[in-house]
Amino acid sequence: MSVPTNLKYTESHEWVRPEVDGTVTIGVTHHAQELLGDMVFVELPQVGRTLAQREECAVAESVKAAADVYSPISGEVTEVNADLEAEPEKINEDAFSAWLFKLKPTNPDELDKLLDAASYEEVLANEAH
Amino acid sequence: MLKTTPLNQSHRDMNAKMVDFGGWDMPLHYGSQLDEHHSVRKDAGMFDVSHMLPIDIKGDHVRDFLRQLVANNVDKLTLPGKALYSCMLNPHGGVIDDLIIYYLSETWFRIVVNAGTADKDLAWMLAKRDELAPNLEITSRRDLAMIAVQGPNARSKVWQAIPGSQAATEELKLFQSAEFEEYFIARTGYTGEDGFEIILPADGAADFWRALHAVGVAPAGLGARDTLRLEAGMNLYGHDMDETTSPMVSGLAWTVDLKTERDFIGKSALVDVPVEQRLRGLVLLDRGVLRDHQKVVAQQDGKDLEGEITSGGFSPTIGKSIALARLPAQISIDDEVSVLVRDRKLRAKVVKYPFVRNGNVLI
Image (cartoon, each protein chain N blue to C red):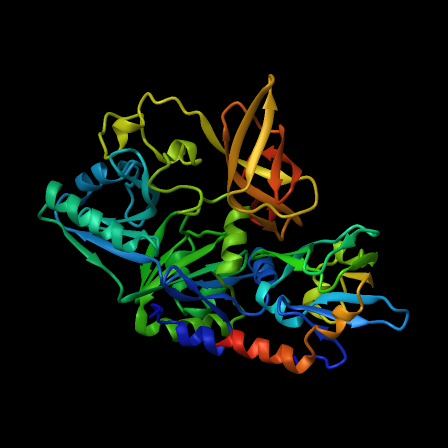
């Protein structure tokens, strides 16, 4: 699967989508779900929680392992995708639409420093070696 | 350099995700571990278990040697083809390996051991042979492949894939085996479902795998093998027991014969030793996933009790997380305990395992 060009990325395999209302939507990448295999459990942050950049804030567990999810930027959690609690397999089906949570950024400059699709593809290429 | 089984190319042709499993290049899954798990519970799946090692022991009085070598009693093996599950212990009562012994004749027994322990098992058997029965011949059978076909429809699909094999094997009861042409067919397995484990010459393995696939047997990887055996409450060497743990605290007391006068290696370390821990089943009541090595805590009469998960994971059949855990003996079935998962304490219930057998949830 190609890496969508309208998203930003982290080296720890989260994707970030800036929304028109100023919030950002965050999920894990297709590559992350491929590494983990079938997802069986997702633990999401509390709405209202303030996160620092790179803070551990969610857990994605597959049949194989538990993976921490790190907040790509700092901000306040405004919404979580509670559907994933009942249907974590949605992440396997389409990782780029199965979002985990939304943030109101406290420092929008952090967004500009995230990876674009081309740089993230380089990260993936390097991991494969 | 990873070791490969005779089916390595077959796995790659089926787009398996390959992983390093104790030095072996093995399939983890072929797309979805969950789908493979359900195939075995509802229909039929096949596993390449050629990384495990058959060892043949031949000569006069093999049985006398095995009476000393293993903890279960080979005198239970009276019918040719009959199989016995046993531990092989060290002198301290620790488990060197768990294995299956097939009785073929008084001059030929076959033992199938785990992959990760095969080298040390063989070295141990050879050393004991030199000491106790130097006339016996012990042969490592890396020239053989092994395929487990498991599930409610497994046997009928094997009969389709090996024309003529039905008559030779349909009367086999659990833990019995028969030879048919170049196939050694045993009604055993590691999933809690019916089925066969089939040993055959390595050079025929890829064709047999293809024939099984053609009659609708789904390939299943090591991932599904682990969730299936956990649901079936079957021990995994290196997780639920090892050389530092006694079979008595590993849920394997039923395989240790302390009733007869027979002496065997490790026996003296087990006799009259109080058993202070037991292997128990856990079902997670809160949301989350139990994993190996998580701490289990409980309070009883104002005393803190502590145990550890030896095998934990998600049960696809039950839809909850389950585990095997070594717990203080005071903790009983139906007690509620806490499991430390990251920074949280999750509630779990102590249950009798197996969790699932022949497609049915038992807890």
